[in-house]
Amino acid sequence: MKPSQDTSTKDRLLASGAELFAEKGFDGVSVRQICAHASTSMNMIHHYFKSKQGLLDAIIEQYTSNVLGVPMRLLEKPARSKEDLLSRLELLFETTLEAYIEHRSLMLVVIREQTSPPALLQYMDRFAKFLEQSKKRGFVRKELDIQMVTGAMLDRILNQVQFAPLLKRTYGIDIMNDAKYRQRWCASNIDLFLHGIVQVQSRS
Amino acid sequence: MKPSQDTSTKDRLLASGAELFAEKGFDGVSVRQICAHASTSMNMIHHYFKSKQGLLDAIIEQYTSNVLGVPMRLLEKPARSKEDLLSRLELLFETTLEAYIEHRSLMLVVIREQTSPPALLQYMDRFAKFLEQSKKRGFVRKELDIQMVTGAMLDRILNQVQFAPLLKRTYGIDIMNDAKYRQRWCASNIDLFLHGIVQVQSRS
Image (cartoon, rainbow over all chains, first blue to last red; front, side, top):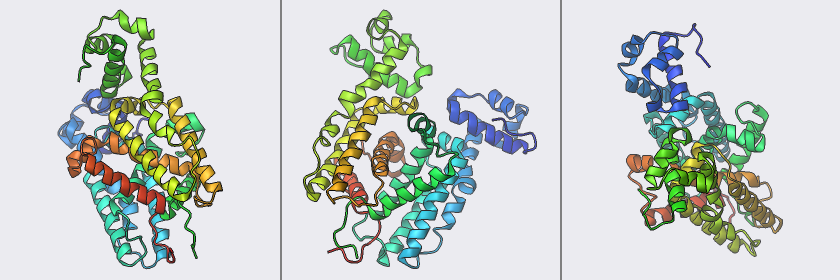
């Protein structure tokens, strides 16, 4: 989808770059193609981003404000109670999924170029710290390896969005557009992550 | 890595195809390049696989015997007890991870071309059935959505192998070669999936 002429040249270049890099990879796209897609002249990439690499860096940097800003706010304060922990993890899972859905191209670029955007590392760190605090307060199992939670939840979201077209073709499910399915999917996943597979005998 | 001359021509073509498709994508590789990489003449692809597409199909079909054969055997009989369920899930997780590590190129091709190999769907089905049986016997939580377990466990393994070079660069961990780390990683993940995040008050 071509970005509209109303958007600023810089934003059009960011959007076109994300879309084309996601589709063809960094090496598969020329500066000329990106400028044509963004309906702008060749020297604009140089003006705003110095080079194609500079444009890629700026696209990845967008992670900070666009993709992970909202979910990160949920992790700012420690959980007050077990119920508060559960609610916040649910919300975190939902808002992270929604952010990835909204910025799917951006995510595909990051996957394709195998980079770790600083904001993603910051998200993982803050999430881990949030869980450590909850463990100290007795809401999280003592045996749990916190790093696995942050990794597993993100892997789940990442792949659901990365493979959305395949999942639609294979199972007819449409996480990108079917809000009802998305809600159900989030609830079922959070249930798994919170309570695990195994039936505990005396759950009182 | 070029396949050795000792391997059969057909196997060399399968190995070279998997490696090059994984690296450059199906459209980014020519029949000529694959044959040169496999040290064989051009007409051999036609002889064994009819076309480049035929070679890709054969590579993906390898999933059946090579990648998922061993883990699938663990799911043949229902779990006899909760302990048996736990042991088998641990083994399933480890052997699936090992199979993906061994056949990483093949996996990258499947990811890149966004296909669902029949054997993968069969693996997911059998895994789901195994968990349903365990639920009927009271070993698995009644509320659990079985589909989420199979999906989440596979996502976790897939991404750990897909992003292995990135994880090595970023965190210095090497799941591909460090057997000790791999074991610890499996144990921590299985603990999460089996018992979840939340501390249960009266776990007796």
